[in-house]
Image (cartoon, rainbow over all chains, first blue to last red; front, side, top):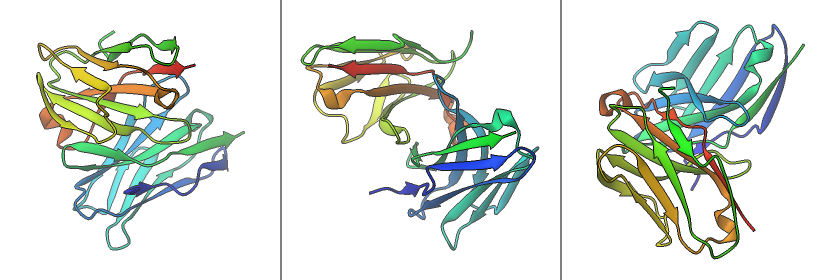
Length: 110
Length: 116
């Protein structure tokens, strides 16, 4: 039972444009949603989060949007930079642990 | 380096052998998590500790797996009688209980296991 899904395994975006990564979830009891970024041979690192009572959180170039009725969240990166190339994991917090999606590999092309 | 440290980084073993991974969390972090990640998948929860108490184990954690955190500091994850399906990256993460209210975990670089 995949409670958190990222349906796009990969995404390619031109440098300077907007990157939009999507995530869907099924469990209404999740209270926080997070995005983690992972470079090869490194562990995931926290990027940005949003409480379930909010619909938007912004941190510099990164904005996360939450649509609770659709059980959908998205991460916007603007403008995209070459250093943003990585695997991005969506995660949801519930019952004292994080549940992760499968990840989306983002490639920023110069 | 004050981050989460995991050892060894890579382990190659033959089927049927036992392996042990160690995780040193960020000091003063009272929560410690183990996750497993296979190719093309996100990290999957295995177990977590609050101080020395193991509070939850996933059904993924078969009886061949055992985790300990004897003094509430470092943790070990042992896999007995390894199988090829155990090949994965084993990730350790830590947090403060209060910090985890917002879900933030600090991950180590992982220990990659290859079972031949």
